[in-house]
Image (cartoon, rainbow, N blue to C red; front, side):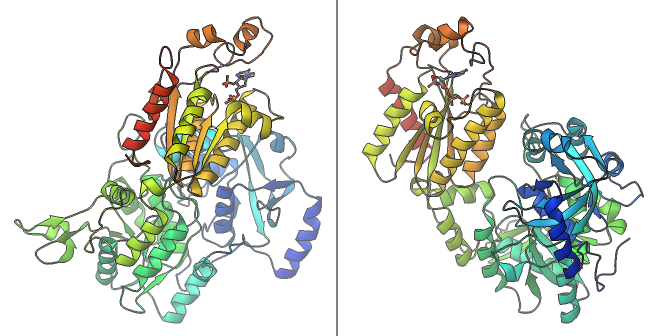
Length: 568
Ligand code: PPS
């Protein structure tokens, strides 16, 4: 099934003339605006990165991939590549029809000839593909809370690649890389997949892996979508460029991969292997806990640390690419160099800085030694992640109507302004509904939209180094989590559950709304006729019953101080 790595691979693009004609004709077709993840998938479908797929999976292939990691013709394929849409759009399309796939600005990228339309069995997909139907897994969370209910499948006719304005010279299609390897005479190429900045240990291990395999090295980082909370790809690419200089010249190359990762551990490793094979590589480094999603909701790892290596090993031949085991490299102080952990004699001093410790040092502006990372990399990371006391952050109050959110939020705002240093914006529930969300009601859909808008504004404020204080009811856990993820890409998210009991909120009934809700005059009233899902991991829980506002606001300040967000 695979093409030798020196030969071009099949793409799904039509010729320039046909593309121009299709663009004109597509004006008549129903249009689907692709989500960011779908754009990543489409790019790799069209350019051969997902060879041998010829489009978004139809139902039979989907079922077979979910159940057996294989297409119906038996080809190994571990990840369901599906086009999820909402019910309204699905109702407007029938199998047999063509639809135009557009990017977020409306530019047409491809035509999908719809062969299948079905309701996704998401719980089954979560259990079989990701190992557990647990929202703590980023892809399961995406499946349940972001992806549409209906899947469309069918072959793709590629019109043009998604446009990227950043790092154009570093983005290569599989055929561009194959041609580059041919030109350079590289026959054996080890790929290194990564979603993190590279430090000295990575440089040592990748260099060693390439040497052991007598191969050249391709640093092939993912710049599409990675795990929420990861360092943004702009920063990472600047770091990669700095590290590239540390390899002997012309042994190593850097290329960016616009993949949307799923963090699916073992299945993801196999998928990564197939993708790298398609890009002309002959080897791939697979490490401990490859593409691991972190802990599940019981605090346990989703996958065993070597599950990915095992699954890869089982399918190595079909993947068509050799696995190179990750050597865990550690720094040996006496010898002032990195060495594989399992080759170090007793009695020597081994130094290591964990990811958590690195984040702590960055956030507190502490020293990061040269044996750990390259000064250029550390400089980039410090530029992106200044100490927490200089970063933006969001304080997100959530709780029932009348719980005291707005009152405490107002007091907090004033106290933060008194401290000075950063601009403070209050996004109060009522105020937002007047200015940003005046057309919205209180259905689940409208509440979610309202909270996403607040989250969007707060994330922009956070990104630009300000303080956003939000005080909506925000009754749904999944939506609050989505906001947390959006904000944590730029700064800290502090969730404060104002847990004043319903009886107390109702007793206060400042706006007379509870009385009206009880009398049935207001529908869908939170706590009375509409749900409130209590936060599970709030940074602080406040019950304002019998506690002065000033004291509540002070508790929040202490929390912010303990998180390093404001100077003590
Ligand atoms: S949500 O669920 O987060 O979108 O709600 P939010 O934007 O915070 O708006 C809540 C304020 O709207 C008033 N109000 C209602 N609240 C809950 N349910 C219903 N049906 C409703 N109708 C109007 C109420 O005054 C809320 O303000 P607070 O400050 O929370 O009391």
